[in-house]
Image (cartoon, rainbow, N blue to C red; front, side):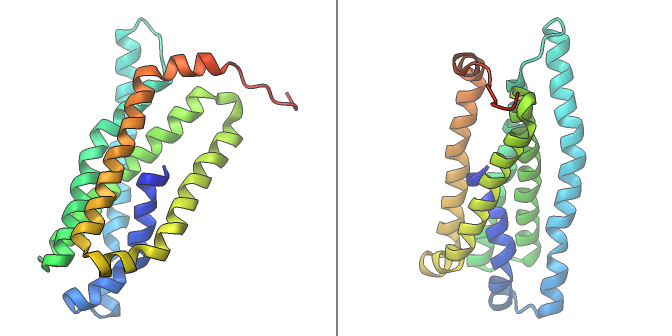
Length: 204
């Protein structure tokens, strides 16, 4: 969650700094530009709603009514290309001064992928530990907030020093690298949960 959602917050808080010099946007135009993530969130919610349900129902149908939480993670396979392409194209757009619509669509692609990924991660954790919904939500939110909080402090300096092509490209690489953790959970998540055993809360 930290290595994917963090860049959303970083882009949201710093993109206005790039839009003025690159495209000559005034404050009103920058404000309109922020309709991009709003639209992407709505589309991501709609697509994710049907995608997550489809994957779960398909698995249940083909496994005699049996369900494993790791099925939830399959949605990230669909979302990952949107995130990687979105980040790479956004960095290219800002540095090469491509048309602002390319930057807008790139940003939207990334946010669209993040919405699907966020639901998949949350659903997987909650399905794995339904008795610990509060604790799961707290850990997921901590990862999301901590990552986003930190990125805002170095996003602009990083882009100014190395260029947006490199900085956003590295961000895409980090998202891609984090996907190997997802593959590990899809392959061995059930065994890891079995090895860890049941949660034993003092208040239970």
